[in-house]
Length: 110
Image: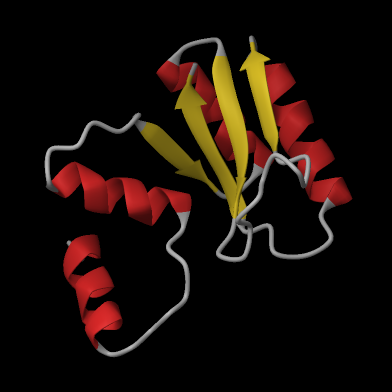
C-alpha cells in the first residue's frame, strides 16, 4: 500500500509547492496521532450514496479536487444529508454546477 505520508514528505523535499488535498492532509495528521474525522472517498454520486449508507446518517458531503481550496464558497459542502437519495442528489447538483476541478466527493459522518 502506498504510504501517503512518505509521498508528501518526498514532494516537499523536492520543492513541490502544490497544496495538499483535504484527504491527504488528514492522513498526514493522523500519522502523528492528531485526531481527524473518518471519511470515504467517492468518485460518483452513486458511490457517495453507498458510502453514506455505510457511514450512517446524517452525513456531510464535500466536493473533492486538488484545486478546490474553498469548497464552501464554491457550493461544494452539504451538511445534514439524511438519506442515500439526498446524498446522490447533492452530489449530482455539485457535478452539474462544477466549473472545473471537481474530481469526486468526500463523505463524512456529521
